[in-house]
Picture 1 (tube, rainbow, N blue to C red):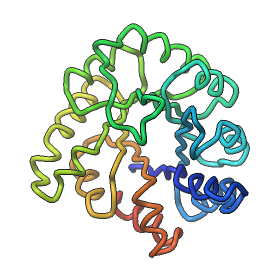
Picture 2 (picture 1 turned 180 degrees about the vertical axis):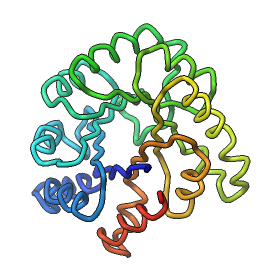
Picture 3 (picture 1 turned 90 degrees about the horizontal axis):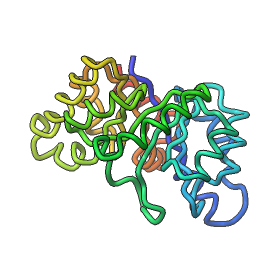
Length: 237
């Protein structure tokens, strides 16, 4: 079964717009789980424009499924992870001013650095996933870092899905096959939605988890949060 982890960054963005606690982020996380989410994903950034570092501390106390914390392993991020000890840490090479994630790691160039970071995170008891573009050579290099999983960055797939989904999925399927051969777990995320998710799921062997936030929260404005989460779950069956 492929698990659905709901990214609640956009709920935090809405809360922060008015400076109060509406919507209540912790209640939203609880409701997502109650409605069928199998994990909660957050991506705190240095400017705390959506998820705040304190949110991550608070969520660790209330998330009953699995907390996945994404981010660039800066000293502040690593200090937070040491304190919170989430079930999964997803390493994403975001620049501090990035609007959203826009590239995966160069696991060849940053091999030594990632080995050190992965080793520390695993010593804390976290499962580690490395955000990655769908290139076979990067998957091979990721395997030598000691990471448990990779997360395939699916923006390119989503962008080209309607123009030709067979061609769009090809590099992702090739990367997934290699990941299986190397014993790596497989996650996927970015720009996945109700149009393109089922096909991705059907064509990526060993897909363990998808994390979806922006499209899911947008759909929930029209369809309701509970119904939306159930609709996304159905794409993964």
